[in-house]
Length: 231
Image (cartoon, rainbow, N blue to C red; front, side, top):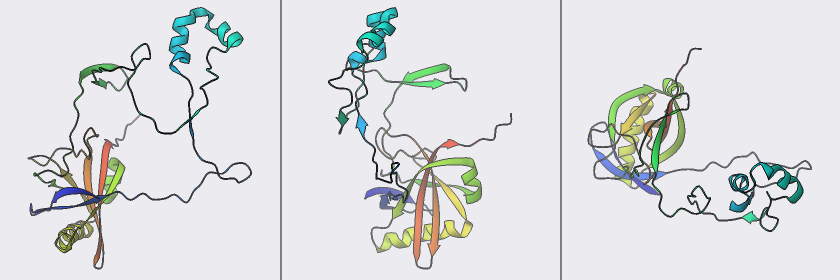
């Protein structure tokens, strides 16, 4: 279980647990006769049979080569099962690139490139000396689900009796207001959350639920705001 440094409305903080619970789907895939099926990964093509390489090699004669010689298929390798794989960068010749200059490219709504900057690796900020802070911005639940597309959820858990009371109090406050609280990182407490080094920055909202002496505190993550566009 990972750790997260979280503060409450009184700016008191505690290091608590952060966990993601995988929910097993009760839906399964079946074949025409009801037999179980599973997904597998297979090799589709090799660098030598990639369309870019074939075009550069055969040019206008590529169609005839495909029809007569099956140059697009490496019969010794295509169709092999793949198990563990690693991601690599390729150059224009489809060879492994050992020195890569990564750029962060920005596009207009029409899909045209408008700006590019050197890519900067983000660092995790959820368990630092400066705790994640409440912004004081409460959003009713019914409104939040219409404003943002939440893509990830984490459950925040206590690690001892003291942190139980700490988190229960937070959940109680959110439960009574039927709202979600925006929390932020950094000195001012307004920055996005980065869950792991190199990860995507997310805006984060806390939701609390209480049932007697039990509580549930959920951290909802989003990087997509929903907007009403009139046509």
